Length: 263
Image 1 (tube, rainbow, N blue to C red):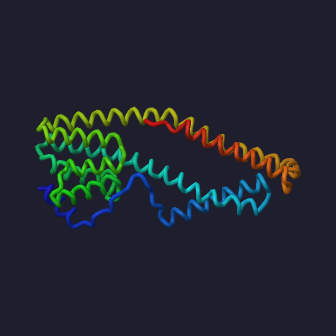
Image 2: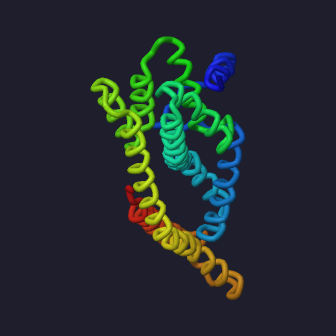
Image 3: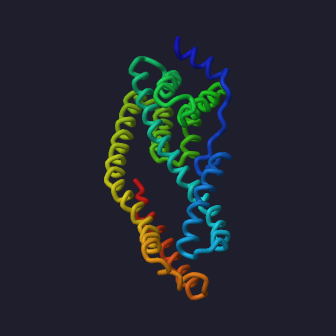
């Protein structure tokens, strides 16, 4: 049987680490990449707004602070991947149940499908290996799913884990319940995709608007030599430019919050 082969393969495999979806650990390469990109951006800001190397040194700590926001963004990306891949798992489980597999074996078979679709290092493939290892240690499937729901914070997984637990205890029609849940999750994700398509244009406009002030300052500096000289290297100019930079940063933050729509 394929499910038996899958169990042996997973048992031989290395147990993946438990993922904390509320935090993100950057790799060394990611840290270097983000710091370099942030350093270049701060150099541009220092040149256009202050024409000073000292300003670049003083602004660099903000690059390190921005890593926290980048970590949150990476967490959101990982959760979205998990949502999409989880739906594929549920669809596969539903299909396997229709083919006559038990619930546990249906999840075992879904691992093959998720590996074919997204690879062994995908988020859901790692979570399935962790679930199977828990099952081999005599832990209940509903308990493993509840743990995934708690760690991920994904509402679809939470709903499925709750429904699955109630159905398992009450002896309900597991095939029908899982198939119906898969359809509901699919419909919700379709609505999310439609909303994301609508706001993606606005996000593109937001990104363009973010860089327009830099292009304006650069263009004026290039075409009109000395236009901003009165704002550089004096206290009044520093105060004015710093105030404008703060207004710009607040505007960027507000635009992020406006477009950060919970779906």
